[in-house]
Length: 193
Image 1 (cartoon, rainbow, N blue to C red):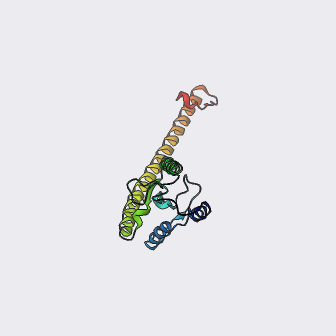
Image 2 (image 1 turned 90 degrees about the vertical axis):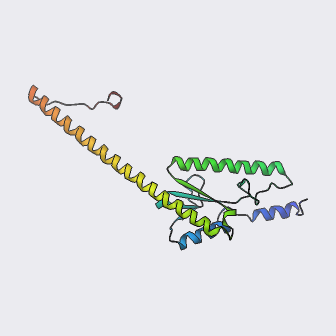
Image 3 (image 1 turned 180 degrees about the vertical axis):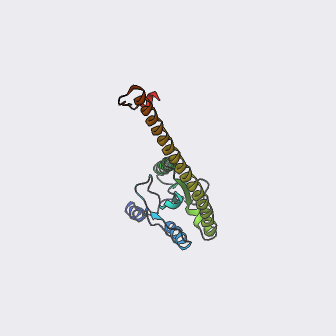
């Protein structure tokens, strides 16, 4: 089917499509807020500027449009009949950018949830939010476990440093007693430890 719009009409139509505060985003944000979750939106300091960020759960949520992000197997994603090369390349770049951003977030110990536009239709909306809630509960458990392990590692490191200082003080005292003058112990560089 040929495009029924002129270039100017198509340009005007496409300019009305926003990347923030879309209908699906607002629906998810309203439902999460109603269920008691508190979050930040469009955090620019994180890779990919996630749509919703829940720091308490160490989770970033992306709400992707099926067409713009190339949701494979979805009826909402079809390549337009005109300017096929442009659209396939655009969607390919979007998918590539999404994968890179997810990898960057995961390398920073963030959990990532991707919600597709088609999962937010009337019939599946509550199920999708329920799935997100269960993932958030699991992410919170993982994050708490990680923080506990880090806390224990820091305590262990402090204990080792304290023990090391005590041993050095004891060696210094023994050397001073043996040689009858003040001894200065220099710190050994880490490469020789």
